[in-house]
Length: 333
Image (cartoon, rainbow, N blue to C red; front, side, top):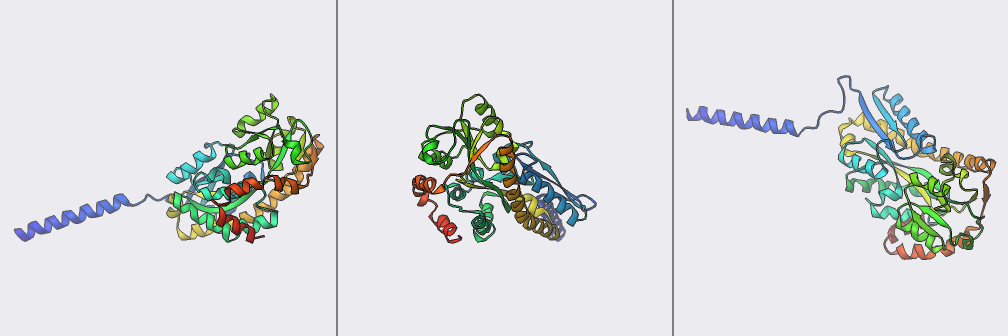
């Protein structure tokens, strides 16, 4: 009897153990036909280089998976702000998010080094940084905040527009009220040039310029064109003061639930997209400047030497905090 009782207890313990293991297993994201549905979101427009490239990436993944992996793309903040999307990926409630480096710096502070003025000196330099070891190291670092880094795309070099005057020297920016992102470095950048930076959500900027509450804004040329800034600002200076990127993030929960073959498909498609998006961005940037001029915008090309000199204090003030990254960026020229 004792042996039988012991056997019963062992059986019960085994069943409880198996039940516990079963409860701990993740439910599969695949359906009965081995298909998977993913969602990918961004806060910007669908017709920019990033939006177009998201659609192409999704189509490429679908083709290479023979239709098994379908990615539905959401633009214009349909699934929330960039910060909302980052947090949704951390929780596993969103599969893929496309977010600006400046927003991501709230999660990985060292990324803020890329927001310093004139640390990226051209597109060739940018590619060496973001498509090389530096970019990969930052993608890998995202695992510390429950994110999977897939790739880094180009938003582009940011330029200044305003409704008051031509900009040819740093002196010309003094007194201008400029909409900036809610980013401390960007604010200090414009203060160093004598402008009055006004942190503001991008969704509010057009109306503020239209009503005269602010004089201008700064963004890549394509963003300026696609958002009809020419209707409220007639002056643009190609200052190229900051090079902006977007990071492509995936929820670790989603990544880990994919089989190795599908992880390989997504990785390969992202590698193709990393370069294709850059080519498209640069083509569209040049076209945007031509389009803006045709719509009545005056475009000036200031000598950046003085702008670099006047913003040196911003680089110096953050130099200690981001020294290792800044040294690596400089070495990549």
